[in-house]
Length: 418
Image (tube, rainbow, N blue to C red; front, side, top):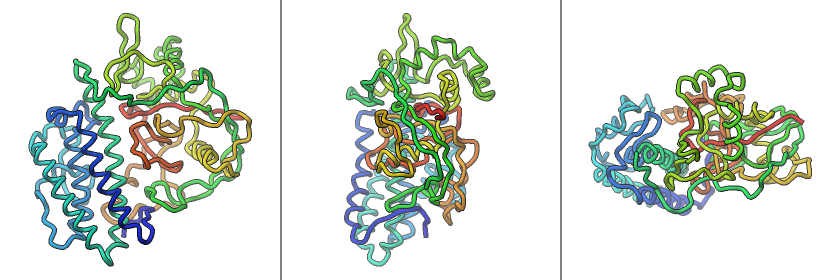
């Protein structure tokens, strides 16, 4: 049985089914502004085509739920296992990630037909679960959360696509992005040190990498009450930071030199004015908005330039938990304003390596490949971005990326010792 921290409470199958249907529908809603041509192109190795995202999350439900638990289920197309498997070695060979964009076939229409076929299967399964509910409900919960992850990735990858287009088209005219804060200056909020309980140990769903709940020593620390802004990043650039090797980690400086970085991803200077590409197209940089699309290397260099550092993931979690409960175990001890922009603006880099918690064991079976095998050479991010689906954020959530990656909606919150 899958050892993800689920759970559907007794009698909640109808609610779970409603969430499943809504999640599946939302993925299609996100594609409404796109043309069929938009959905096929892969602009970079890290970014997958929209069509692939739609098919992969569908393959996930077919492979791990329907094929095992719906009697008489007919696999839509046997070749899709090769096309739309992501990284599951236990499921056999697959299309290389850098070449997902060459999958002009199957067509987008056939992928949509695939989704409809699997949706019909999921509805049939939910209608006849019976005694299987205790086993299948947790798998459906995993599938919902997996699809929500890909909804955010879909928008991330659409931005990469539109930014690579010389016409700089907009995905939407509606405000979509980390919103500006009204405060011009940042305050510092202090937190107690001590032994704090961290990790997910309560009710509700969590990924296996958020467990087990355990004790962690956290020294007294301070966090900035808001995210670093684009105005502050402009000052960092104007001070010659991208030409100052002493600000950078060795690997970071090597990346800056090799890639020619001079600004965050999607920024470009025209006639002395800095512009940035977003889902609303190419527009002047909003100085009050949180900076996004920066790598861990850039976040670390900025923190050093600012006379601060990045928080550890447990400092971030303790602080976030205190905002929710106000109780010891993360109690704010200063009279400074509460933390802002914890969730729904930008993922926040931490200085913590992505490693297993004490006592962690990957789940048994194929889904054990979901998190555990990636626990090396990556950094943890906390919070969530504006593109994170509603209900998909929590204080214990551990996102993770390689330190050079910056196409995700990643930002910076500063920390320092007391």
